[in-house]
Length: 273
Image (cartoon, rainbow, N blue to C red; front, side, top):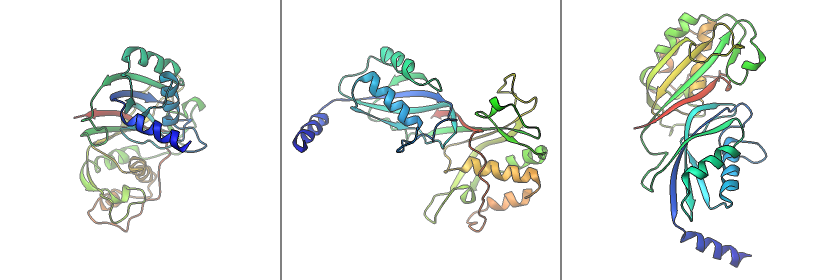
C-alpha cells in the first residue's frame, strides 16, 4: 500500500492544476462554522462533499476568503477551487454543483483564475452586518437571521457608540485571545447602526436594527465583541468614554467578555480590489 500511495502521489504531482473562483452564499444556522472539523457538520465539509460527488474524484482542494464561526451566515463570500487533472466544463460543473448542494448553500458564480491569484493575500474589503431586535420576544422563524434582546436598549446612544469605531485604532480589546505578537492595529472604514430597512419578512418584528461594519480585515470575534460592547452601552453598563478607552493604542488591561450571539451576524459583501 505504501508503494501504491507513492505512485499515486507522484502521479498527482504531474497533473495540470486549474484554478477557479466560486462566489457563494449560505445560511450558517445549522453549521458549526466554515472550517472542516471531525464529527460535526460545517460549510466546508458540505461543499467539498458536493464537489467530490460532481467531479467523481478528490484531486482538488478549496481555500476560503475567510472563516466564519458556528451559526454565522454569508450573503456573499468566495472560495478558490484548485483542481488537478482535466479542466472543468464550467457551465456544466456549476449547474451540477448547485443542484447537489444542500438548500442552505447556493453558488452565485464561477470563473477561472490562475496561479498568480491568491484569495487570502489579494487586497479586499469585507462588510459584515449584525441584525437584532429588542424588547418583545419575536417569532421563532426569526431565529436563524437575527438576535432577540428581550429588554429595552438605548438605541440612540448605541448609534453614537458605533460611530466611534470608524477610523484607525488599536483593536486589541476586540481581538479574541490576542497575545503580544498579534497585530491588532487596523482601520474600520464604515460603522453605522440604524433601523433595519434591508431585510423584511412578514414574521419579522415591526422594528429591528442593523449594524454594518466595513474594513479590509477583522480579527476573530471582532464584530461580535464590538456588538457586545454596544449592547452593554445600550444597557447602561458602560459609557462612550469606556469605548474610547478600549480603542486607545497599547491598552492591554481592558478585557471584553461580552461576545454577542453568532446567529445575527453575517458576511454581507466581499470586494476584491
